Structures are given as structure tokens and as C-alpha cells.
Amino acid sequence: MRNRLVDTIRNFAIPATMFLGSALLLAQTSELPKAAHSSTSAPRAAPPGAQTAAKTSDLSGIWAITTGQPSWDPSDPPGKKPDQLPMTPWAREKFRTVRPAFGANQTFDNPNDPTEKYCDPPGLTRLYNFPWQFTIVQTPASVFILYEYVHVWRVVTMDRPHPKDPDATWLGDSVGKYENGALVIDTIGLNDKTWLDLVGHPHSDALHTVERLRRIDHETLQLELTIEDPKAYTKSWTSKRIFKLSSVPLGETMCSLSEIQAFQKNIMDRTLPSPPAK
Image (cartoon, rainbow, N blue to C red):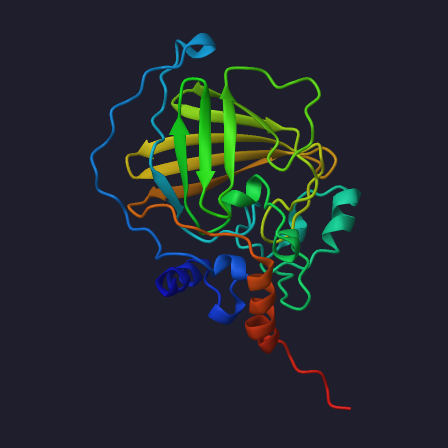
């Protein structure tokens, strides 16, 4: 756990006492992954149905984020200028109320990140912000993505349309296809209870994401994420993340309110200025 914490703090380039403000990112972890050097797996057969002409991209393996980028703003990954995203008045008003642990508005005084405060699921887009691993399991009918962070898993159903009126859920309705060597995942039907990223950018229930996962070499996975939300942003945009193949098995990282509260009390509250003496 200590090795994982030291490397994670270095990746995020912030002091140890200011790391995320949550026991979620400290507890029950192993050391950060090292690059694996196994031979390239053989390509898998193309799925039947609509994608018979497309080759299935082999995305198997365990993947770890390479750098700490708390914001999905492609021109401001560290979140130093979080106001510059093209927010609508509705989203800008919501953004004024956030108290995140990252970015220009960083604070550890009464943070209101719903994941840290209530153990709410982090949401689809934030799963790629955290410094924990994930793995991809491909079958012809479905692709499963298993995230080390709070053991969240997703199902991407291949080669079918979205339902006409999907229920709003934490991870939405995801459908996939293979296109030009990439797995393309289209997701709608998300609720508005999560943040887009660690700096607290909001989103609405109209959020629509497109993930393009491409293995650019045996050791490297690239994610291109397109975010579209007409209620919250006046235009869509695309950001990238790079992940490296890991030789470390997935570990256990659970959400525990008792650990969060103890961490806030015993560590984070001690970093805050003392109130003036009366």
C-alpha cells in the first residue's frame, strides 16, 4: 500500500497530505503496476453479425493510467482553469457549488464530492481518472470492462442499437462495435448524480459519450473520449488518455464510509488552518 501511495502521489504531482482527500485512494491497494513483457496475444476472431467485415481488436490485459490528469478538458488536464470549458448557465451554476479535491478550486474543508461523501459510484467518465487499473474481457456478444476502483464492472453489448427510452443509471446503456482497429463504445442513459472528472465539472442526464479504445502497440492502450451534453455544454469535445500494460493483478479497492471519515478526521482536517483564538 505504501509503495502504491508514493508512486500515485508522484504521478499526480501533489503533496502527500493533499492527495485526493479520501481514504478511497489510500486503502486496500498494492504497489503500482510495472510494465509487462509477455508476448503479443494472437488476434481473436471477428464477432458475427453486423461486424463480420471488421477484425476484432485484441484489448486483453490489465491496464494502468500513466499520468495524473484530473480534468477532461483537453487543453487543461491538471484542471488549473476549470472555468474555461463551454458550460451552459445551468452547468456553470452547478459548478459554482462544487468543492473538489483537485484543480484550481481544490479544498479539503468540507468537500462535497458525492463519491467521497456518500460512497456513490464515481460514474462512467471518472473511472478513467483514478490511478487504479482495469481489464477488458472480449466475447463476440459482449465486452466486459472490470475496474479495480470500487470493483465496478460494465457490460458493452456488441452490434445492437440503444433502447428507445433507456432508464437513467450510473453507467448508462453501452453498445459497441469494432471500427478501424478500435473498439467504439457509445453510451447514453446516464443519470446526473456524478461529476465528469475530479475537478467537479458537472453533467446532465443528456450526457452522451463515445469511447474509442485502440491498442497502439502491445504495451499501450489509447482512449479517445468524446463528451456531448447539450444541457451542460454548448459544444462537444474529445480528450485522450494513455494506459500501459500491467504485470500486477487487479487488487481490492472498496468504498468505506468509515475509512473516509477516519481519513478526513485524522489526516485531512489536520492540514486545515486552525480557527482564530477567541
